[in-house]
Each structure stands twice: as structure tokens, then as C-alpha cells.
Amino acid sequence: MAAALARRGGGGLARALARGRGMCSATAAERAAGAALTSEELMRMERERSAHNYHPIPVVFSKGEGSHILDPEGNKYIDFLSAYSAVNQGHCHPKVLRALKEQAERLTLSSRAFYNDKFPIFAEYLTSMFGYEMMLPMNTGAEGVETAIKLVRKWGYEK
Image 1 (cartoon, helix red, strand yellow):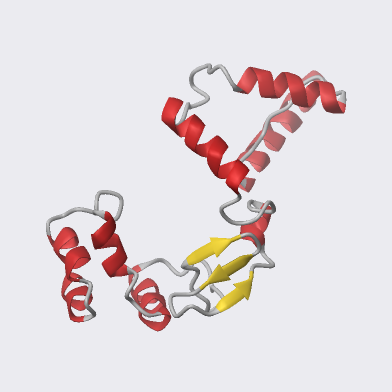
Image 2: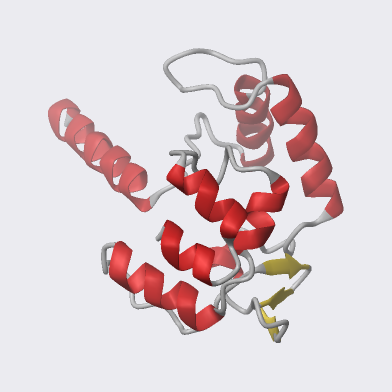
């Protein structure tokens, strides 16, 4: 891949990958060099190097703002899918980015294996708002199904 990137003008990124550094540790200039790849090249690389658990629509997202996205060639699209409703507020919403940056500078992630100072306040707010006794937010369908199975089993034992 490093050689292919170098041929496409992605020499900085190719060198970073050759040194064993990934995208997160690459410099901004090295990441920008990778952006020189075309949509077709990126889709081909993904088809060749990743599991085929999805059959994506042949559009490469490269930048987003509000409800619009751009591909590497600069074509503009309206994002009607909104990352399965994960970005209904739009891409790169200033208020969301500000909150994300403030939190990431304080604490990036806290596993539910520990307590943190935000989750209980959120749980209190949400249960009060909807009149529920408890809540459990999920970030994947697998967690939702797992929790539903546990609830059904508990109900079965009690009833």
C-alpha cells in the first residue's frame, strides 16, 4: 500500500505507513497526502483490504458540513442517511464539536466498569424527563438485544 500511495503522490503518508505509523500518528501533512487518492482508488482499496460485511453505496465521504458531504473530487451530496441517525444534527455541528472537544480534553472515555461524573446526572435527567425508573443507553444493536435477553430471563425467573 505504501508503494501505491507513493505512486499517487502520497509519499508522506506512504513513508508514515512504511515506518509502521498509522493514520492517527501521521502528521497533518502525511494525512493530507492520503487525501490525494481518488474515490475509485479508495473504494478499490477498501474492497481489497476489508471484510465485505456491507455493500456500500459507491460514494466516498471525505468532508462534511451540516447535511452536506463532499467526496475527494469535490462533488457535493446531501447526506440523507445521517450515519443511521447518529448525526441528525448535521456533520461538524459547532455546538457538538465544542462539547466533544471540551469533554475529550477532560476525559476521553470512561468504561461502564467504572463510575464517572457525567453518566449518573444524565440517567437522573432522562428518567425524570420520561417518568421511568431506570434507563440504559446503548450504542449498538448488539447491546440492546443482550439487555433485552437479560430482562426476559429475569422476568422468567421472577414470574
